[in-house]
Length: 476
Image (cartoon, rainbow, N blue to C red; front, side):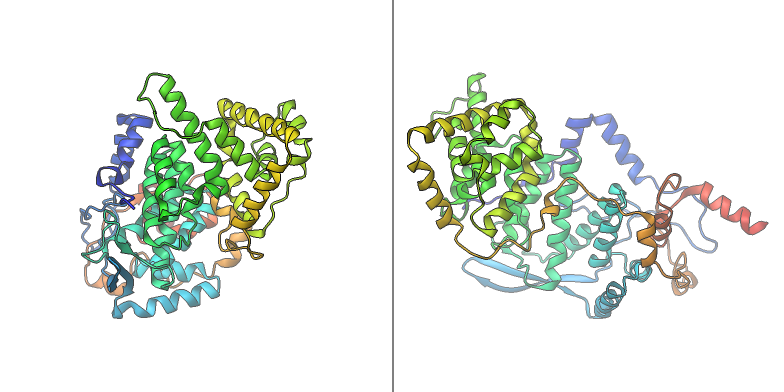
């Protein structure tokens, strides 16, 4: 298979954001992101600027600490043309993981914050705070923590490891590799939330290329990002070439997404763009095929989107759609993931019309010959024959755009006395270590418990007013 990634497509985030929001807005936000705090420096400590190294995955901010070299990457073996890698911790910080596991088992967020105060690029601690911020509605803080994690993990790459090559494998079965997969998946979702669907697609390609077992379920959303970024022909080519067995069209998400892709390719050809002279099936035929193979999807889409036109009620009264069953635990789970990830696509009127036309054709076809439904049921049973849910490790909620909130009262039980936390460790303060400028944060109107935990992190600052208020209280 051809490499999934192309160099000129891998870092399109800034360009994509400029296209969506305009250059002035994006440049202004980038400048704000890199402006150091103006709060007064600690006594006896020199404040320094910092120019972080450039990376492919994220753009580091100037207030981030320099990479601490706490991790590296080891080349395990080369087999069948593939290089297999694994992240490893530096022996000097190997105990940090034990501290993290103890803190996690005790639900002690302060202890995890203490780890980050001394080891600001510990991956699992950063990802823990990313989740905490996400469930507290602090999406930008969550994204920052994920990006710090990716920055550190990219800095640790082996010289032979590159996302621009298709021969690099990072197996999820190694525990030290798992944070990279988790961070990439979260980063991909954050890009999508910002409307940067093309960037999300490129990250999804990279994620899928790392481990052929697809431990994070990139295959269940790569088609969505391709559709949202209008990469219709790429999606068709990918479905044909992936793993050389041409079976992706059996997956619920690809069954419907390939029909949608073909619909937009046909529309573009009608509008005078490059004509498609292939002998591929029409979008209506592909949508009809998808409905015959996965009739349960229709009812779930109607409920989730939701589709409120009275014609859908009539269509669902047909026994083929109204009484449809998943057939296997794996397929039911795949359908639930598909509907959760893709339902927003079905709010486009042109796609609703395509779906309705195909559904009516299915009903009419079955009136003529019901054996076709039996044939597709056999295909479905053969393709998804397992009695076990082979995708139970994938949570439907991980593919959702909806994030449940975490009330402050649920956060407080996980917090212990922060007596061990200080602005900086005493040993570093006595040594006169330079402190990097930190990004100022707003406090007003935010979750108080979350602000408290955030204040323990070494790169967070709340500006002059916050400092002055504290000084005034101390003077009184």
